[in-house]
Image (spheres, rainbow, N blue to C red):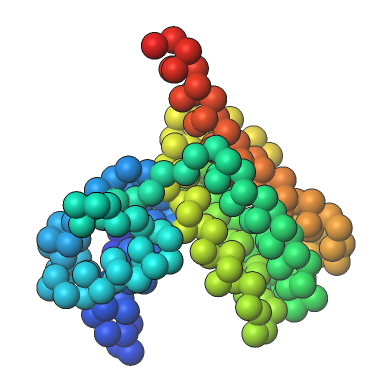
Length: 228
C-alpha cells in the first residue's frame, strides 16, 4: 500500500506526487512487475490525473518505471546481471560517500543516525518490512548528506530506485537477512573516526541487505525452473 507523506507548502501537486511515488518505489512499496495506472494513483493520492501523468513520465525517464508497448506503465524487473551491476555500483558509490561524509558528522547528526538505527531495530523486531526499509534508506541518506554540496547522493538514489522493488522480497527471510546490525558497526566507526571500518560496515550492510535478498530471489527462481 502506497504511503503518502504530507505535502509541503512550497510543493506543487506534480512535485509532491513525484516525490511520493519516487520514495514509494525506492522503499519497496511496489514490487517488480506491478502495473501502475494513472487513475489508480490519482485516486489513492487524492489528486487529478495530470500531476500523476507528469510524475510517471519523470519516473520512466529515471529508469524507475518502464513504458510498455501498449502504453501501460509497470515497475521493471531486473535480471541477475543487471542486479549484480547495480549492486556493484552501490558498493562503489556508497562506501566512498560514507568515507567522504564522516568528517562532517557532528553530534546532532550522530544522534539522528542513532535514532534511525533504533527505528530499524524496532521495525525488525516487529517484522514490519516497510518501516525497516524506510529506516535503512533514511540512515544511509542521513550519513551521506552530511558532506555539504555532495553530488553523489542523487547518483546513489538512482540506484535505490532500481533496487527498491526487490526489497519487497525480504518479507520471507527478514530475520535471516539482518542477523548483524551493520548500522551499529557504522556508528562505532564514526565515533572512532575509523574510515576503513565505516566503509567495511556500509559494504557489509549492502551485501547483507539488498545483496542477500536479490541473490536469494534468483536462486528461488532457478530452483522453481529446475523443479517445473
